[in-house]
Length: 438
Image 1 (cartoon, rainbow, N blue to C red):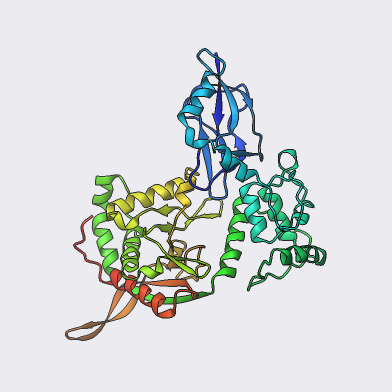
Image 2: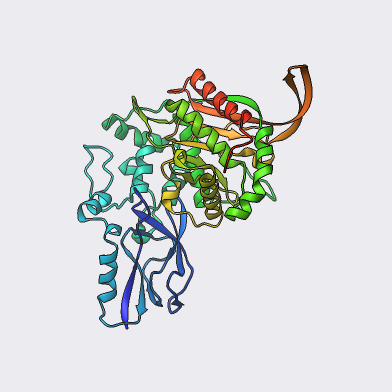
């Protein structure tokens, strides 16, 4: 028998660690190759880790809520074979990219230096995510040392620092942080949050702690509104041709491809064409610089069964046919709802679509996910009487109408650009060719 070290696999660019959510097997259990053995969470997505070999779990090295680095052993399996170290050596050989080099690990493990003049003992470990949150919230080293960590060996976890941020705002904390901010010349943000007041509770009230994903969503939404001045334009679109075309093709498409044909591939196609018409909507802001994106990657806001929200990304959407878009969308939606997304599936979006119509809503005012500069909300398709122009004069007819809402970052997208882009999406949908092939 030989030992096999199960390593935390690489989870995409920029993801260097993950938190153990729960083990699906216990020590002593036998697992088969490709069995999912543990659920993990990053700041991007939750996912499962499968075992590449069959064997018995003899020791779990990382317990629930502990943090593991990419390439670090999280469990030891007993497998068929000889040589006590052979299995672990094979893992290192097969997955060289999974283990960060010494220089990378040194950078990751460096403690946060909030002020150049502050002497740091070096005994405070901060993960990259915790460090990023501390920098964004201007949390000083002195403040960090007051946080009681719940992680391994008292380390500060993401939940610890988010809880601290949520409860932050007392006069003493502000006074303590002020000298440090001055020492590093940190500019005060334009938008400041008011310290949360204590909410009184009454008999029968239920207190429900936010789960990990809801905390991340809340943090990202507040940050998005603080960073980008939002403007929203609205338009009502006649999608009767789109409805007719889908009704005509959905049965044949499902028989041929084994995939359902929804409206989303059509909406994505129209958005992609409009972005190609107005490429300055496909940008990000970095200080005083505008980064014009080469790729068109469409984020697709997806509601999860637990009520949370995730945004998987259709990569290079401009290079996909309608059939390809349908397959990509169905695949991402299925994996999102079944917790099968990989971290890279939620990265790199340059523009996002939110289908609020799937909940029966007519319209919405979506929040722009950073670092994008625009997002489109699509409302429910509703049959209404509408005035049509004909060679014989105006007539009233029953049409399929839909509202669209376009929110954009007024730092770099003015009303003309944001409005014209929306109008082009409108035109592509209203003039949808009933002979379009799929």
